[in-house]
Length: 161
Image (cartoon, rainbow, N blue to C red; front, top):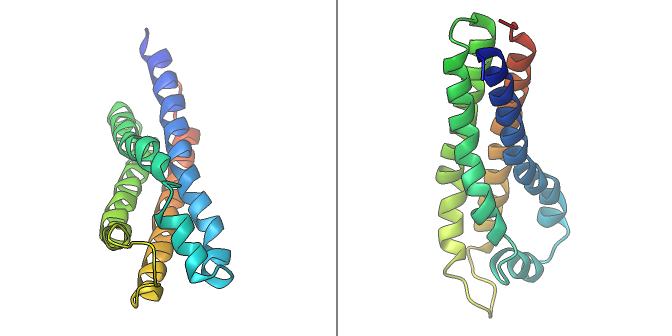
């Protein structure tokens, strides 16, 4: 495949994977307001902790999150001769990496606590853990959304060679 075709293929693959990574994060952000303001603690705990509701977020989302860093990194390398496109795509790569770091720094510690919860009384630290989990997902979404916008600008900046 000639370079132009390969660049086009990799660009489409990259933006698709980035969008698929952003999607579940955006879904978490959309759910957060009612989950924080209207849901009872028992409902939040039941929907979030028990019954494996978020299992596919791990099985599908985790590989997508890694690919959303790898693909734009490779695309940035391919665009190293096109300064504007290169920088936008590199910034997107870094923001998707930041989103993963935010997940590990904010959401995973909450998940670790959630994994210890069992049916019964609502834990004393419920409000703090719920807030950390929800706001952590919001921070992840913000980084990915800005990264996706940067990636889109990068795509629009690519010169056909």
